[in-house]
Amino acid sequence: MLVDRARIKIVSGKGGNGAVTFRREPFVPEGGPDGGDGGKGGDVIFRANRNLTTLMDFKYRKKFKAEDGQDGMRKKCFGKNGEDLIIDVPVGTMIIDEETGLLMADLITDGQTVTAAKGGKGGKGNVHYKSSVRQAPDFAEAGDFAKERFVILELKMIADVGLVGFPNVGKSSLLSVSTNAKPKIENYHFTTIEPNLGVVEISDTEFLMADIAGIIEGAHNGQGLGLDFLKHIERTRVLIHVVDVSGSEGRDPKDDFEKIMKELGEYSPKMLKKPMIVCANKTDLIPPDSTIYDEFKEYINARGYDVYPVSAPAKKGVPELLYAALAKLNEVRENEVDEYEGVEWFDFEKDDIDKDYRVVNVDKKNGVFYLSGTQLHKIFDSTNFNDTTSLRYLYKYIEKSGAISKMKEMGLKEGDTVSIYNYEMEYIEEF
Ligand SMILES: Nc1nc2c(ncn2[C@@H]2O[C@H](COP(=O)(O)OP(=O)(O)OP(=O)(O)O)[C@@H](O)[C@H]2O)c(=O)[nH]1
Ligand SMILES: [Mg+2]
Image (tube, rainbow, N blue to C red):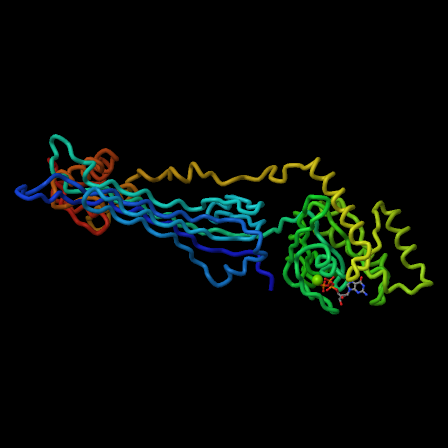
């Protein structure tokens, strides 16, 4: 089974917390603050790798997490940054954010990367919080939270030239004699069940050729290996339509050609607009007195396509075919259109700011007030509840956010319980 779609969870590294430490010096009972900063959490990065052709790696493994940043240490020592997690995917993998449904990246060139979940920033150590009035800051900043998200990986192979045709007509044979690829070649239908890619080197240049499973009638409705494969040729620039011109399996090559054209067209009219050349393969199997090739060629030429006679295992006619494919490819490259027209992209900037970051939510249950919020959580984590300065900072933050007035509207009075992340406090008017 071809694996070309996967849903995985990615989690970046959490930022390390800043440290609360003090210098220890002989004869000085309590030295100044020397708590270092926490390290940054690792990013989750996707990278296109041309040696991969499927998303098989994601079939069973569903969660990927980058390393957390280390907490800061005494003597102003920084915590180590968490290591980034690099996930290799095949070239042609689209990364989609599940929540918004928006495209984060389309990794179409080997080595291209995208940072899909940024690691949390490290928190500042208490050494940063020293001031004239606060000689011994007993608190530090907590590291930023990790980013978690579900992403959909969708592979649509990118190749310059795609091979299409009925099963067993010699597509993989052609790939194997044209490129470095070593696809499986057997004398039965559906030998190829995963797309194969190979690099064609000619005329001091190279292009990528893709071999897919054979297409049969009804493929556009999912017959045979159907749709799964048609989508992999959707993004090829030029098609080589391979036909068994000898009719060795008792079919008429002209019929084969039309049936495949019908499937391509019904899958997407765009397919028929792709430049195409026709490879009349298995010419070595044509009986000497047969006119089958000439008839086929005349018919196809009349349909507006060029025909190249080939005998793939013997490499006969292969160079001519490849030069013709390259010429078509060069034409297309000159007139390339923007394939992303109308596509809505994921907004990385907005993702970074997190619109609800500063909102403090208020909830009341059984007379108890509950506060929650992303930034509140972070400040709460870095609060030292034994230190008045630190507590006052937390209180000021809550007041500024408007949560106190909101609670008052909901009936807050002196002595009521306010709960923040399971920490319960008594509300006092004059703090
Ligand atoms: N005589 C002859 N046999 C060929 C030629 N090309 C391919 N074959 C044979 O035809 C059979 C099928 O070849 P493949 O390359 O596996 O065909 P395919 O189109 O990739 O087949 P699927 O992957 O099943 O769709 C193999 O036994 C090949 O050796 C040719 O030009 N002449
Ligand atoms: Mg094959």
